Image (cartoon, rainbow, N blue to C red; front, side, top):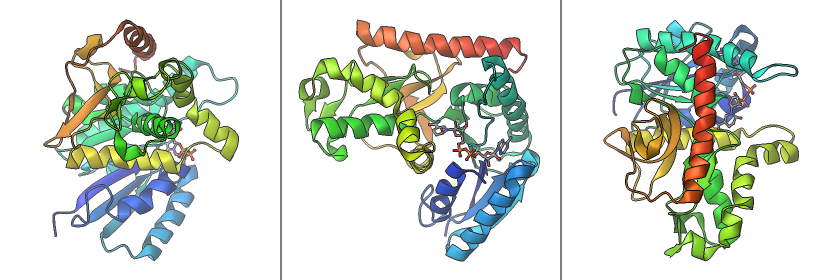
Length: 326
Ligand code: NAX
């Protein structure tokens, strides 16, 4: 079999961690030939839950699961890590100002970025899931000057998968007959799920569904899907978020096919998004790296939507910069 891969996951005692770890240990990121060393990062209150999950992982007798380490020190957890899924974050609690939220998360993602910089393997790839994901990823990236910038990403695959799923539901097509969907911008309510290049069963999506729906209700439904899940399920998206994080890492390593997907990554200036800002784009993965799909036409409606979300990202950037977190 291949060399083992060392996969670090922060927030391992939480609900996304619980939904992700069994699938990761079963080999769903790197495939059936690659043994997995799991490194679980928690804060002291979460260690018990992570230890309980480790007992259950042992009880699955996964043939690929080589080792499990649980620690509260990012330096220990990230030592030699090839992949890092940064899920643990400080949630917004009642009465918390936005600047409090950003600085609490800066206190997490700054040190984790430095620990990745000093301890991770040379091929480290990072996806940030913990919110505010794009800005947390930016903080980690800026605190890891020795790691190539394009190894830091934030998760917008859940938004992408929601966008595909809801388009399939509306059009009556199956998910496998849909391509060319893009989520642009921030993983937040300003995100722009864009159907202007999407294809449903060989037909432009904007001919297959009511374009007024696609540019109205649909955008809001995708952006607010997390809230809908909370309302109906009574707690926030967990299995679907874990699934998206696994899809993201799987495709980063193994490549996308003909279709593209959506990933938040440091902008190279494409589509007018300021350089370095971690924003969601249409991307393909080849040879182990993401490349932004080029040459898509951006009409007036799309331009306004992308700009609005990028403006929000710039505001978050400026806020964390003025807090000294970058
Ligand atoms: P939980 O509260 O169930 O779990 C979070 C875990 O992280 C807890 O066990 C906590 O002890 C741990 N933790 C907190 N600070 C930590 C630190 N500094 N180092 C290591 N571990 C730490 O939340 P869960 O439902 O699993 O969600 C985790 C994060 O994902 C949240 O920030 C949430 O907002 C975010 N989400 C992001 C999504 C995305 O698409 N990007 C979608 C789902 C989810 O809402």
